[in-house]
Length: 108
Image (cartoon, rainbow, N blue to C red):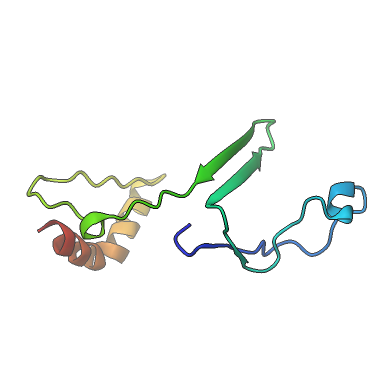
């Protein structure tokens, strides 16, 4: 939504022969960057365990004030998670300096 384009599917090479809609062009797989004309996209997810989902997302054209940064001195909760304590520490070590710079820029 931010770029105004639908990104291409990088793993698609050719249509399956048994899917008529792909072969006759009634549906297509995006293979090159495509302009997003109406600000609405559909997303499908088919899970291996049988859970399926479909959602429609519509772009919100509302402009952010101050790039979304708050204009108050209220403390903010920052949530970080990992599967292990080591992964959390690794993440914090990798980004701690950049995070602090960003945090101070936006919240101090």
